[in-house]
Length: 224
Image (tube, rainbow, N blue to C red):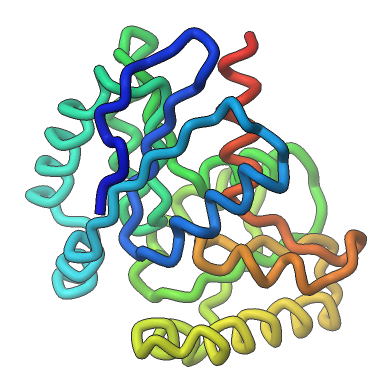
């Protein structure tokens, strides 16, 4: 699904393309923009669930899928100010776009989460729902200086794929509660689809989630 995918750039509007593998992420990112009152962010959504299905069937992000994604993103770049890859499994593709000479920035949403984690030494638990994201998440969050606890939430992804949103969020919420009870000083929701659970906790116990951080980064980048 694509909405206004080739909207013309404007000096007063930051045009952001969000590459999703789940249609439910559209509302999550639109809601995040509204909550942050960033009306000058114009979000366009491209939903391609078959990309994640291919990665899951192949055991991860293959070289062939990586190459096709790079080509797709290069085609989109001239039309946007920022492209956000909201799927953790596909996130490593952003590493092909690190040059400052790129027509527009290409970022992975979970990259903002990792940046926040790396800025402090708090005892951190990073929660994942989909097994296919584990490799990319470990590579992103675990550095020589920091090794957060990366956990897969049992049964969560099966519920998500079955369309059981309530069951999915229940699994995520339970995992967050367990992490706090076990002494975590910070909890991170690695996948964008998990973000609504953060609002179920009081401010001092809210886990970090990617959509808000990613959109704030877009706003800050545009105002430099």
